[in-house]
Image (tube, rainbow, N blue to C red; front, side, top):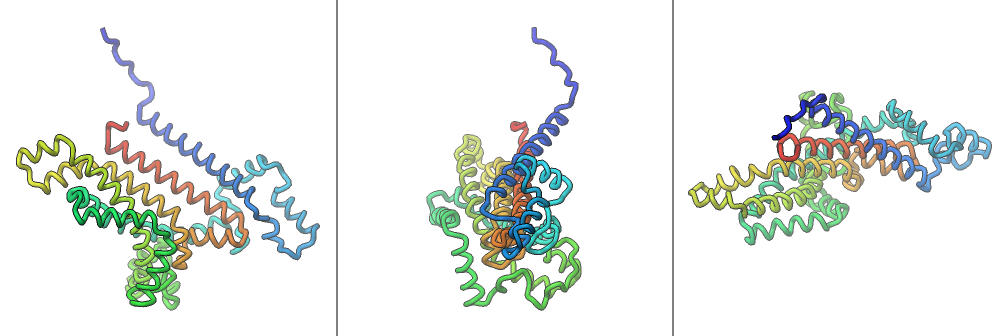
Length: 346
């Protein structure tokens, strides 16, 4: 005789939530520790970046003690962890501003660029992947596979310079580097930090079209890389579904092809696609450094690269931690969506 199931004292969703929070906390703690250790091992002298090369030895030693660098590395990490938990990443030696303020200023630019890039990748990549799977072996399938291969293998800086030369330098279809033309800078008040949104809120359409002309090229470049990944995964998922027995049964019963493809096969890959899109978005947020440098885009990637060249260790570590937190957060969000939409994964 089967034993009656014991009533749970703690609801399952509370256990799941606590487990998720614990995973986030441990992951972020590990991320902070690794970032801190790498920052200390980098061949950068943070004291020299503050006092300059002409400072006396006594000044150098005093600043060295004031920055806590004479303490054991574990003690330094404890102090650093305490500061980070209060939102204090230190002061940037390049801008002389608190790092958290600098990141709050530049991060919306990266967010805007990655969001538009992901949108382009989804709108083009999903239909292309579905079409390639339905027309397997056709010319369209071959084109889709070549596009994905080039997207994976071509260096992004080479494609960026080529796109700038052709579409800005030769054809003049889009605006050049930067986020907005110099005569439109600071013309709209910053509400969200997203200049496309802020220009709409301010009803300033001249700034909107100018900003759109500047962002379309770098966003298309990122969107192409997103397209390569999304179309490839979509094609793979769709091929698996189209070879399933229920698809054959639906066709035998006389269901129209569009219903078989979009109503049955595509409906069963939506959960997987949500995860793929979320991961692609996270990769664009953390991997847009080269794109921002090529297009002089004033975002987080450009900020970290400039800080690295200036030996600005606080800015490098603060930016790296923020990028890592965003990546961890989006990964966990994708995992949550997968569990939410697919009961089998719970």
